Amino acid sequence: MKTVKFNVKNNLPTQTTNHVLVFLKPVQPQSDYQYFAWQDLNPSQGYIIPFDFSIDISVAVGDINGGLGSPTSINPGQCFTAINPNGQTPKIDNIDINNVKPEQAGIVNGCNTPDTRIVLVWSNRGNRVITVGKGANDIINVGKIVTFELEPSLYFMAADPTITGPNFTLQDYSDTTEYKLNVGDSEVDVSWTRGTDSGKDEFIFTRKSAIQSVNILDYAHSVQNNLTDFNLTGISVKDWAGNTIFATAPRGKYSKNNGLEQVITEGANVLNSLQEGQRYLVYSNQLPAMGVIYNGQIPQNGYFDLWFVSQ
Image (cartoon, rainbow, N blue to C red; front, top):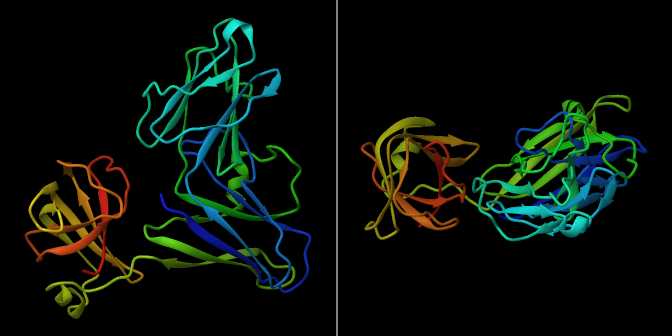
């Protein structure tokens, strides 16, 4: 995905020793995982601290008794093997064995000289997210595959400054405020505030999108009729010239939310790979051709999104 910039501003009515902690969460998180604050921000009253979010995964391997290797970069869709040749400490052999889903990164425990239980530390953009394999019931034994995929959300919390290390549990996420990433997000302003000096910490998000909602071709009548969503049938996705068919779907839905227009297909059949950021035309039984841009998400379970662009 593309980089999204977050601007965190301290709008508290009084001074504080608290920091803003930002967490990421893996898909299917486990209670035995150890969680890090991915960002630890300390903006002065009235000041802004920015940070960037994108997917840039790395992983470090060690054994259960301590010691950790250097992080190895790994992309979604790749699966590497942890090895311990000649009884040495575990290290990552970064030859892709192609054994995970396209949205996942994975590590296989191949440390069998001798058999060794390993620990993994997963990071994003160089900052730690979780430790896997240290819990009493979280055992990465020989042959086990551990996968890592981030939820498309960031979790904000106000708390006292952290001690270095994985000091948080899955239960702590219940005290956070979630920001779910939207297709087209380019920048998000985050206001940290309280209703009163002793009130609850609040985070207010204002998103900025690189994709603007526009009316195209003969589609303006949907706006004139104040339609916000309706069902589509007989959908086909073609190139900008209207020649090559990239995907078909028996049904789908048009929706308009916060000024952005979207088509979500259902039961899609992808005939040719769609490219992130490329323009396509969507045809249906209900409407004339609509210009859209593909958001880069890999279609899952027959669903994928396309967002409107100007011609």
